[in-house]
Amino acid sequence: MTPDPLLGVGFHWLGGIASASFYVPYRRVRGWSWEVFWLTGGIVSWLIAPWLFASLQTRDLLGVIAAAPASVLLRPILFGALWGFGGLTYGLTMRYLGLSLGTAVVLGLCTVFGTLIPPLVQGDFAAKLLATDSGRIILLGLVFTLSGIIVVAAAGARKDAALSAEAKRAAVAEFDFRKGILVACFSGIMSSCFAFGLAAGQPIRTLSAAAGTGPLWTGLPVLCLVMAGGLVTNGIWCAILMARNRSAGQWLGRTRPIAEPGDLGDPGVTQRPPLLSNYMLCALAGLAWYLQFFFYTMGESQMGRFGFSSWTLHMASIIIFGTLWGFAFREWRSATTSVRAQVWGGIALLIVATIVIGYGNRMEV
Image 1 (cartoon, rainbow, N blue to C red):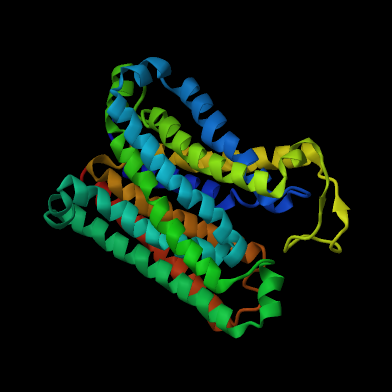
Image 2: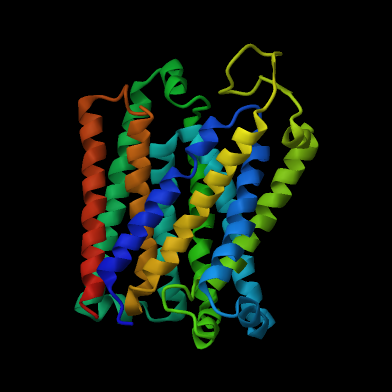
């Protein structure tokens, strides 16, 4: 099957939509503490969905995993655990900065580290990005991506500077710019480890292809391992929070006081969680979180020798659709016309970036 970079760009856009949308169902969860709904959705995204989709779409999944050396299996899990810290704090970033600004800051750093470090570590950065016309075009696309991210983040900073504390919390209930930026920086750096985990799992892709798996799906067994690492990190942290807050009983319908920022009602009033609704919403959020990487591996399979550029396409797509969700939730309703125009200018740069990178990859086909 000949790679089709334009098809790959389309897959990355689908992954971007899924990633930008995953937190939306969580906003409708009622009566559950953060650690409860985060782990509930995470069990779907880190455990159930990866093994289910890999079992359906690949050949001899367990045989492929068993045939891989232990060192090959451990590296994706380790990077997945490090990525888990990024995913864990990504959810916190959404709480403190909102979808638009939080997504831009986190994924800006994630783009730089996740795209450039793999070819640098492999020693072929110059050969791939500097020595060929296609590589230089892809590098230009990365510049466009970073420029778009900076424009969107700067617009968020301008909006923040112009709002009162009350207005900020009207848009994002737990808005905290300083705390949010610190969390976002940590999240962006750690989240890039996902790209390293996928790169470390290349021998598993080869084994899966040899077992008869089609080229679109060879990355799915690697996802099982990387996501397992993420489950370890997030599971431990959520368990600690549940023990501290005594919140595990909420899974069975135990009420909790409405005392957290963003809750509706008066402090001291108890809220019984709607269990069926909460489980369904968390499952939907977890599935969306997984689907971003499901489509990512499909897109990466179509990018040829410049597969590492998939990370840039993925990040750009997430920021585009995350910003659109921010407008849908009226996070920018108090911004001036010039700030809104700046945001749309940043989105335009990101769209151009995906086109440029797709074109650069197509030159090699």
